[in-house]
Amino acid sequence: MQFVIVFYGLPLISDHTIMIPIYWTAVLCVGLYHGAYIAEVIRSGIQSIPSGQMEAALSQGFTYISAMRLIILPQAFRIILPPLTNQIVNLIKNTSTVAIISGVDLMFVTKSWSALNGNYIPAFLGAALLYFALCFPVAQFGRKMEQANKKAYSL
Image (cartoon, one colour):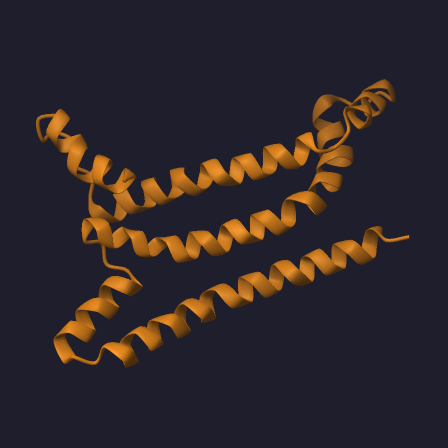
């Protein structure tokens, strides 16, 4: 929906003086959409740390910034990592929504090629394999980071 509003709606309300190219519309919309989710993941991770941790750090003479950097964020990282990895995988998959405004992405190219050649199954299998090749390493990296983090903090 953001794509339609920014790409088609902005020129209408600005008398066609503001026209953002498809690429930058995609970057802006996908960035804002996932930026909001990532900010919420980080916020909830930080808020999950008991407030006594911050109070203890401040009472020991830490500044707010150093308390966040040295006390709160290392603890919050363990909580933030799984949903953050999930959000990065979703970001990769959601780039296919750029096709709403005729942006060229993997799915747009797949649909165009398969319509031209009539080979739908190989085209979409290839696209699925490419999405898998992009998403699986990110998910594995997140899993390895989570396991390493568990080992570091286990008793």
